[in-house]
Image (cartoon, rainbow, N blue to C red; front, side, top):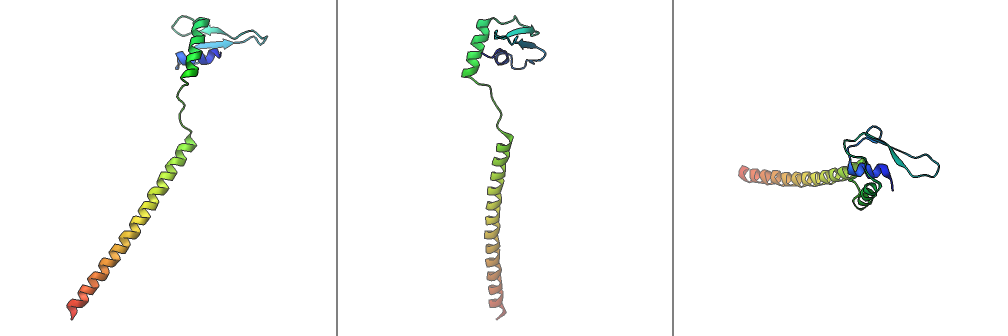
Amino acid sequence: MNIGKAVLYKYPKADPTKDFIVQNEGDGSASYIAQWNIRAPIPTKEQLQAWWEESQKNPPYEPPDQVELLAQELSREKIARKQLEELNSMLAQELSDVKLTLLSLKGDNAS
């Protein structure tokens, strides 16, 4: 169990450097809450274990990778640009057809 992550699961806005501090003596003993500045009772081992288990079932939301979001946006822009180029080409052809029609009509009226 990761005590810090368990506490952050229950108190997501807590600052682990100010609101609580988890320590480990490094001698093989378990980690413990050395300092508790949250306006709630210090959690029991059972509460911490329950929060930890729940956090593993419901991992916190992680925002999507910014590079992936930019790549998706670039892809959408490329598709939109391609569609606009095709539309522009089609409109240019239509305009050319209209111009030829007008010129032919004008030529018929000149006779």
